[in-house]
Amino acid sequence: MAAPPTTYARMMVFALGVAALFTGMAVGAAGCGLCIPPCPSPPSPAGSFEIIDSFARPELVGGLVEITDERIEIHFADAEGHDWVVEYTIEP
Image (cartoon, rainbow, N blue to C red; front, side, top):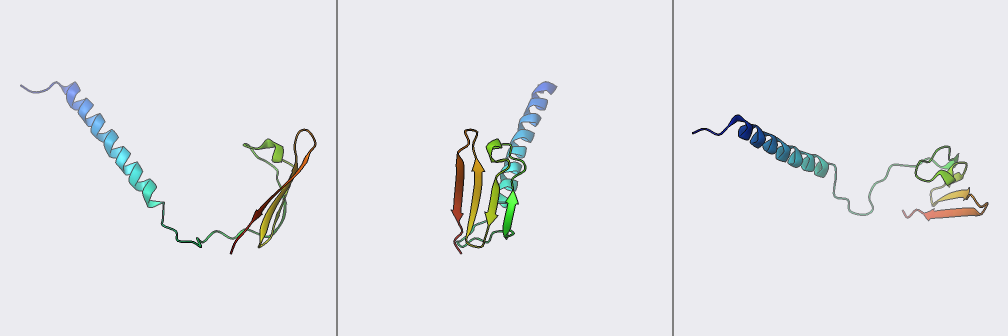
């Protein structure tokens, strides 16, 4: 006796879901390359820039970013009027 068509349809949907899962994992893993330090990074333009939009940190809007070969500095003021400077050092 043959199984009802709904059983075959459910098995097919399950199999397609598993195939999609493994395909997504394979595509995601292909984008992750092994990087042995120093990892190449895209060059950032040196200079001063103003932050004009920030969804995650709206308090940064209006702040200034200064980028050099050795460091990145972000100058901004919070809602209470306190001035902040965040400095990141870039290692060669």
